[in-house]
Image (tube, rainbow, N blue to C red):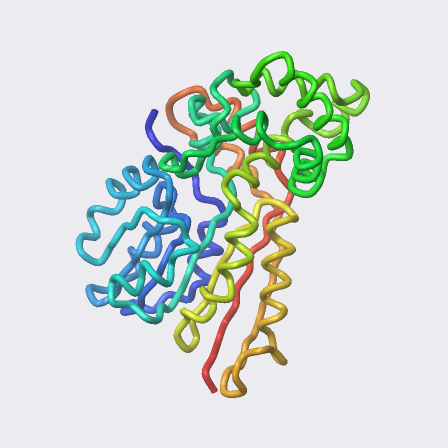
Length: 317
């Protein structure tokens, strides 16, 4: 299946970066290269772009999409938590802009064998980096009931987390839970029918929780933001698209801590600007060419109703 993903808030992100033609820009969640392509179009021959992603399919797709920009583009397979190290390996200490588009892509949802979708039968995988040994099945079958409850409560914010964890443990005693639809049916049986009809697909929160735990998404975000802010040149900007309130709270808290007054040395000042952007209908058309896209669309629609665009502008005074 070809890697197809429609970049959200494309114009807002590109404008927010305030691109300098000779600048250095990094996309820490490269994906199919949608944001990257628009950034690279505005760079001169002296400008450079570094794309980072841990998904091999994204790396391949972005390489094809961005090849016309030649040597100004460098693509690295890595997690954005290692951005500083990867840039150092390239001889780069500071950059003019950073982009993060957090969460799962429509391609990952639509590719059944990746195990992200609760509407397609596939092995319980959910790895964003397939080099990782641990899978979602290891969490479902190996975590204690208390730990399952914790991640479903904290990362899925599901009011029925305790009952879902209980049912998972009961069912796995009969045999390992190995597929997405098997897990989906267990979750459905854990939630009263009247509530299943009120808030979208009953499995969406548990699948989100397991995916976040497996890929350590919130930990990586929390532990990487300050370091990325420190990578910015004078006047540099970081633009982050968040998909749910858990990510958003981390970004807001970090940005506010970096406002003035902040913990930065006195010779620095920071200005933080926020704008909540309502989901655009065309985002629901993500992955708009080829393949069966229903599950990806459905799960994208069921995400938070809003995106948040965040900029941090750091100026040396």
